[in-house]
Image 1 (cartoon, rainbow, N blue to C red):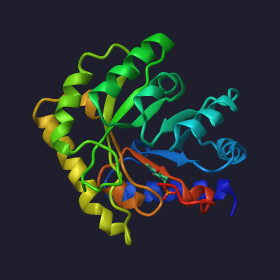
Image 2: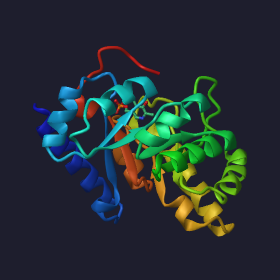
Image 3: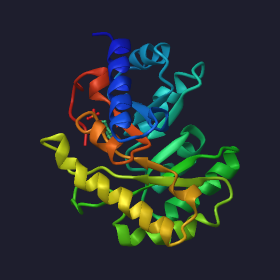
Length: 233
Ligand SMILES: *Cc1c(COP(=O)(O)O)cnc(C)c1O
């Protein structure tokens, strides 16, 4: 199957999952995760109408951003971001899904002011407390909402989670539901809705479950580009 065929199939599966949950399919954005794959495949997907692409590592992402100035792509950073790379990140990425500290928020905001960009930021919520994963535990998130209230350029627009790798898609449902319920609780507690617009959750193995639980962004790599040559964290 071509990338164009696989994209069409993933989009159709997203739409079916949305309809099964009484949601409008257009309320879910597909982010094509191109990490480890060459820019040629990004161009193939772009030609098939895909506009949002996700990368895990800052260096690899920046190489692709720099090599594709002709493509008006919205680049998403999904992996951990060190504060010393905030400057480049604020200029290059449309959305950063891995916010995990107030310091990172402030550095990105200052860099965005300098660069004249308005990056959208998602707070990565660590639900399972796995040692190997980044993110903030739920009780650390309100402090980041507070820190977000004073930003000048960057905007916190929602939450992201990366649950333990599922053996079966349903294994992820409790985690996705938990993120949705946290969102609802914070809305009730008065956190501005603009900071909780997006829920980034779901990958190739479980994106339909994520859509049923309220995902507004799904991050899909393997189901579009095929198996990655080397496993990445
Ligand atoms: C690699 C990655 C994905 C995509 O994973 P697939 O299983 O290939 O769809 C999604 N989110 C994050 C944070 C990733 O690192």
